[in-house]
Image (cartoon, rainbow, N blue to C red; front, top):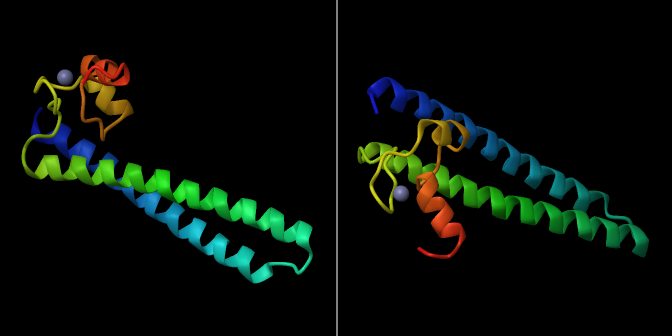
Length: 117
Ligand SMILES: [Zn+2]
């Protein structure tokens, strides 16, 4: 992979990272809003608990993605970006376009999905 390609993926990763951080911030502020507006009525309180739980889940899965993006950026620094962490082969460009933080090539991803690695 050449420098220009790396730079393009770096931009994609950083943009996605920024988008995630913004969503995490938004989730936190809407959480705050729900707490502030919490009604004394039990029905409303039950509903707001549900919404709060949802935003916690969102934050957890987005944090996971954030970790993958940070990993990918770290692999870039180590000049390992674009190589499958399992077999070392170059990850397909089409796959990186769809999932710039991919750690595995398609073959290894399929094997991992099947629980083989
Ligand atoms: Zn592989």
